[in-house]
Length: 123
Image (tube, rainbow, N blue to C red; front, side, top):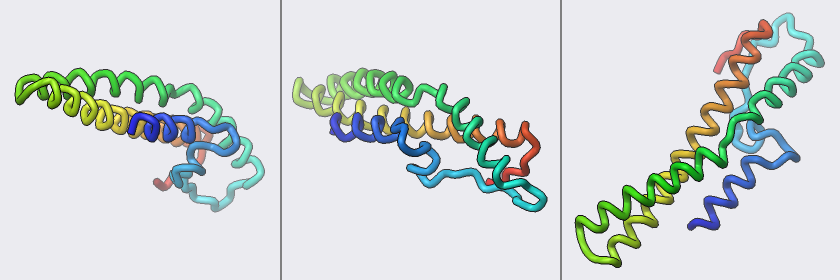
């Protein structure tokens, strides 16, 4: 599972496509009166700002926190085997939440940037 999480993080930071294209979370704007060529340039600029969101770091931090919490619960509820299982489950859950939080923050940055440039973002 750890490899799956790392693959998801690597995929989410791939340079060949924007994260928004990979996740299907592209901003929807009201195109009435919008110069589409200019919008594409602005979207690329906003996505470049959003690249500063540290998705992998957020995921890594939450993996560690989840593992710690999971191992504590495992220790309280059982033996060393339940500690390991708890740590693993906590790490996976924490990493998943970290990636989700990072993607949400990135989407928020793109939307705010576009709105700051005068676009009406609908989603």
